[in-house]
Length: 380
Ligand SMILES: [Zn+2]
Image 1 (cartoon, rainbow, N blue to C red):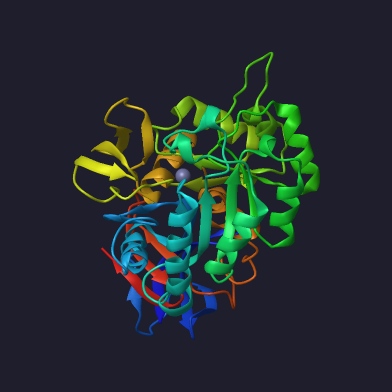
Image 2: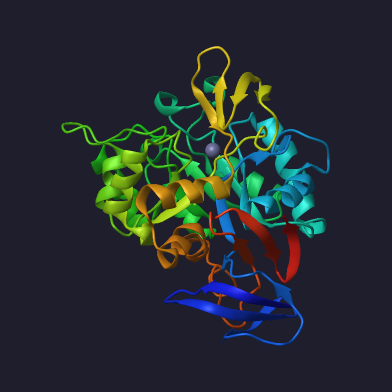
């Protein structure tokens, strides 16, 4: 496959007019200029590394918990529309009985069916090890303290496909953080009511990831600085940001960008199952929610309940708010999280011999095409 007449965004520069050759799923050449060889003519559009969402529960009518036995495949096929080539499928707080069922089904999907659409890299478990004080839309009666035994069971059931866990750091003494790191699982501190100093324990053990900065956590109060303060103060900590313009005000998006810089932000969706569906009433676990445009809120209280925006929307929003140059933007969509997940040697940037995970965007950053490991997964 050849992709030509492309504005190619590399790590250190932009090729204004070039072409890319894909062979055996990988990037075999990146050249300046034009070619007479036949290929996909993208007519001057942007060509970027495919997006990686490390925190997405679902969309298109399915999620980790709901839908039939093909739900994980349904999601993988549909999410390619958003420019996503790799992702972690996130679970919400469930009972242990239900989690065992879901993680076993997920493990089966990962070992036998993870072949169509965007590639799932594993699971991101968000709950039940979170703080009742910062529970967001999680079911409070099911929350428990971080538990190694329970986690080990889910690791086994998922065939070693648990790759990230969100938990409140203050609910454990550091042993849980160490357990995750020993098992090559990314510890992500979030849904937490800790004071900033309490983060040091986990930071010193190696925790470098924060779940949706500012949402569901203690903040930047001047006398009781919380987790958000610790996340901003540590410049080598990667923060997830839901940049839909709803979960975080644009002025706060600016503050995060100025403080963390493009090297320490990763854009996420945190999307739930109603993403990509018409407005109306849906369910988030046992709770009734209303989706209106990209906002999803609990029917009873109006509290935000996951997100309804697509990844490409969040990319456009952050780019417009901060006028982010494309070579910086790709860090926030692909590079930083690929490094965090330990897959940067094989994907995350347009580099020779890496997997051909590619998104083509028009001048308004709308997705025109998504290429996953050398195959077209979506075409507008
Ligand atoms: Zn979430």
